[in-house]
Image 1 (cartoon, rainbow, N blue to C red):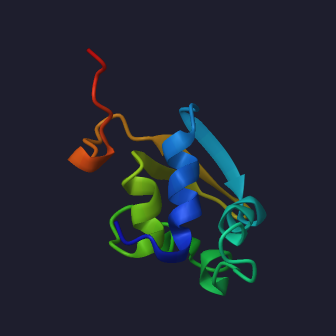
Image 2: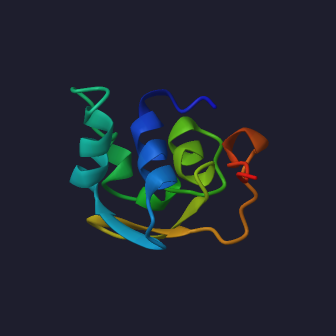
Length: 101
């Protein structure tokens, strides 16, 4: 998997029953602080060209945390990030639930 300190964010999206979530930077940091109490998003994730950090086409741990859970960043705004479930995502086999017979 390889989500590093972003594993709590992956878990949040994996368990979410919503189709869309608007999260502030503080809310995102709070998910991760459950595992890493001193965690803060890097400055470039919150200031300037924040779209670089919140890019769905990246392979870094923070991006994998939402993509592998079946989500994508829809819009990155000044104080929040809007995530949506990615209807076209095929989850890896180890994440699929088997049907009970």
